[in-house]
Image (tube, rainbow, N blue to C red; front, side, top):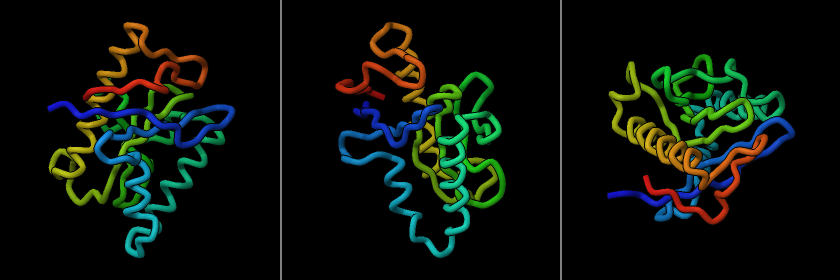
Length: 159
C-alpha cells in the first residue's frame, strides 16, 4: 500500500532550505515528530542539542558534506545528523548543498539501522521518497531553482 506524503518547509536561510516529509495520515512532519519525542528527553538531551546545533550550522553555512554522516549507498543521498558521537540520529536526504529533506530518527542501539525495525522504517520511507522525488524532477513535475523545490506546494507524492 502506498503512503501519501507532502513536503513542508521547516527552515530557510540565504544558503539552504530544510524540508520535511509529512504523511497525509499523520498531519505533521516527520521532523516535528522527532522533536516532539526527544526535545524534553533527559536521557538524550545532549544528543538532541547536538542535532539542533548541527541544523543551525547547516542553515548558517549550507548543507556541506562535513555536517552529515553518510548512511546509504554511494548513489543515494541518505545521511544522518550529527556527524559525531551520541546515540541519537536524525535521518535525512542531502539533495544538494542548498536542499535537505529531514526525516525522522531515534536512538541507535544496534550496529546498523537495518537491525532496528523503527529506524529501518524511517530510512526506507526516505529512500522511497527520494526515488519518487527524482522521478518528479526527471519528468518536470518538480524542479529545483537555486535553493528551492518548486512545484511541491499542491503536490502529493505517493511512496
